[in-house]
Image (cartoon, rainbow, N blue to C red; front, top):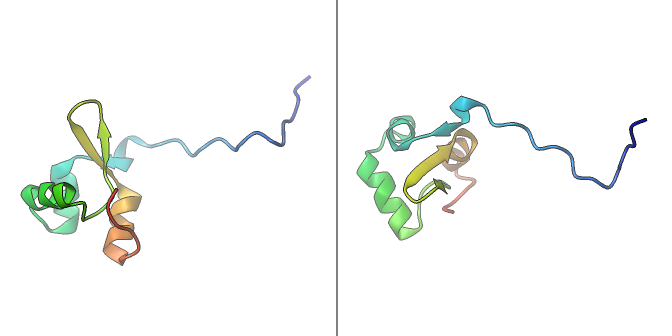
Length: 75
């Protein structure tokens, strides 16, 4: 018999492989250079980004869309 725990948070939507983009892909979507993205990260500007491990930087598609719409800032 399964118990339904209504206090448990809902499972987050799983990430699809195409949801996280590298610098080149994000730069292409934003019509910016990779160096511009790096400058934005250094200044704390630009779209939200995630650092995976020591060096890997990725951008989520939804964060890029929000940045384009002017609704989201830096991480």
